[in-house]
Length: 312
Figure (cartoon, rainbow, N blue to C red):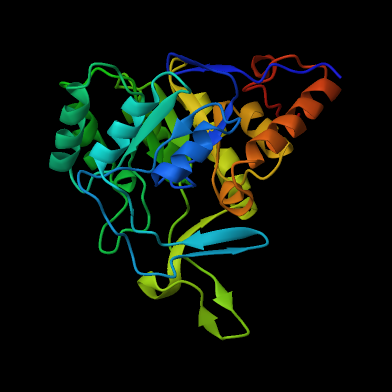
């Protein structure tokens, strides 16, 4: 069997593999980040960092079942300085990208000012879509707020930057958000973060399974793949060609990765399955994807990326 080329060029960085972790999955602590560094993933993406460390919501706050997961984590993280120190300490071992989350535009400005003082550029994913902050709305559902944030960001920020979005469902919302994002020099868009305010019920205990928000949380895993694929493909068609897509949601097999790339993704993130299987998941997914590409006589992901066919 010929080994297909799974490399990708993303946000100006060459990656040996198009498969990476999703922010929030196995990437919060030093030990977890080192596990990812030593894995076969194409890069490491940190937990979404805030200006200061956060403990997050009360436990239990994560639950997994056969077809998915539900969580209400509340952005637990060790703070921006910890993740920047980790990036500095690793040198050129493997590309490490930073995820950022801010409670408001002022905090975001302070976070980005920290990055401007670095002596090297850091590719950054700006999380506009955390669905599990108690008392806080998802920023990306407020289009005027997103526009305000991006205007302030690009008034002074020049490092490679992308945004992580929640799922959208109406055509007009896809079009309005794409039109807005096309006005800014973004490098990439990540689709999708967990659909929020889902509820999983344990019929044996007649109870919810996580403590925060009376059991309501964001869902992930195989059950959200059709929503994720729709968002990737829609934004692939609507965004400028120089804005790359990251697919995220429902990835548990090489076929899932193939479908994300077919819909337009240049990079694919793994979340729930990484939490379930551990960092060894990357080697398995890469092997499964190579089998599919070999069977279809593709030698690289660029040969089929974004070439999803319509009927008729």
